[in-house]
Image 1 (cartoon, one colour):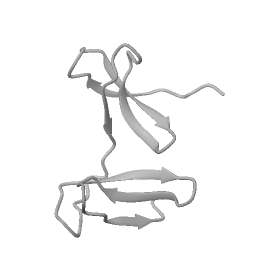
Image 2: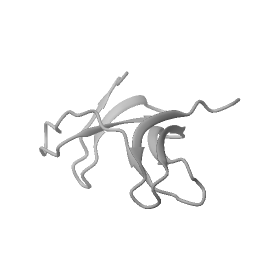
Image 3: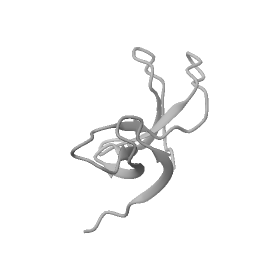
Length: 85
């Protein structure tokens, strides 16, 4: 199965190559197109603030047991909502 690569219009802050959207075992994320030489990655944000701790954004994640969900990235917060699309 061939992976579909989506351009983001961003450049890698470390090496200057284009950043692309990839899909991993925890869902979609943004990564440098020069992987494995450059391992820069970042989460795709929802643009919605965490309702519990106020972190500026939540991220969409995936697990086999829970499916898609959104979660806070702040360590120790623990906010999670199931059923993200």
